[in-house]
Image (cartoon, rainbow, N blue to C red; front, side, top):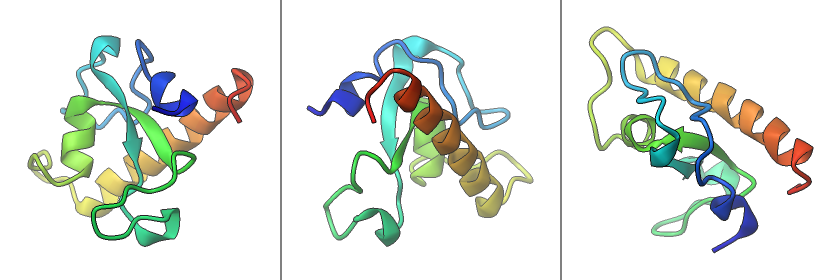
Amino acid sequence: MSKIRKSARDKDCQVRIPGVCTFDPATTIWSHYRGEAGGKGGAIKSDDICGAYACTACDAVYDGQRPRPAGMTKEEVDLDWLTGHIRSIRILAREGLI
């Protein structure tokens, strides 16, 4: 497991999808970007740099494993994830992981 993925332990969720986020650091994982621009292909996850600290609930909605909140578009979920990605990259930089 990479240093970036290990660093997710006990971090706050940075994706924070309204009506979904648990705000529980015990459930935070390193959520990988779902697009091919991040190196994803088939069953291969994106590169670790293309990720965000997300609680498992936010990650499940972003990944499509759980439905979006009523009235929320896929684009809004993607924007929440991308905002969380920027927050996460700043944390990684501050902690010297990138």
